Length: 330
Image 1: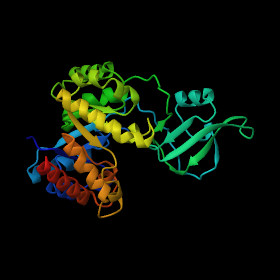
Image 2: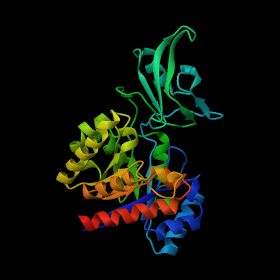
Image 3: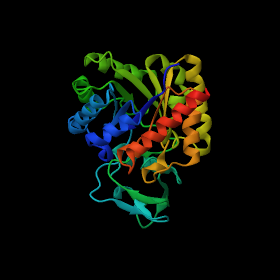
Image 4: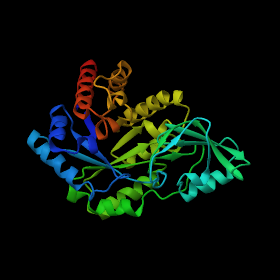
């Protein structure tokens, strides 16, 4: 039986070689680099440290780049904005992309707006003070630049790849990239477009991972499988696309379809979220990791826990050891 792969996410909390070396020592196979917040060029020092730490640890590192793709994000905010429950905010007070602004201007009363992977929830309503549509804060929080935006029930018609995505693929081999994660896959055409761009960039040997993050991805899962090397159950935005209590069933469904088709799949998002600031995970988190492996996951990944958390190497230790216990159980 092939061993389940262990991935972290590279970021400020693990940018130095020593921390990365500790993470490899704890069992990490490779890392994800999120290109929604940086580029290969801007992260060159981190990538150099990654390869150096892996070499010292006797590991051939996997480097997965998470593309910008069709994901919708807000623009630049000079300073973080605090939103309190009950506040009313004008559409223009948040640097929404033009497509989101137009959608909100036409939206029905009560249209939900999810920000930062659903941490913040707004609802549209008519406001006399704002001379039109305003956004009522239902679930507040602190909003920073480049956070995700989702309008449940609304599909934006955007290209599968940005020009920046294409530029990054041309440099992928230079930086030792081994796989590309395509976000918000909606159809096989999205994957065909990415694969074509990889081939044109001389990256035929780079694996393609399809992130399932919306209803289209779930509904067309069987048609996506032949066009990718691995399916990613990306529970962050997938949890925004449905009521949260429906998410476990969606994960089980995707897992079952992948098993039946013999396609590898990864489980990601909040696997050890409490370890962002705590040294010990919750019992629910280790059970979640264990069950993902028992369900057949070929790989698991932590994100903010290592990119911005206080205990990146410790998070990898718990992830690795829980996975190994699950493999014994299987």
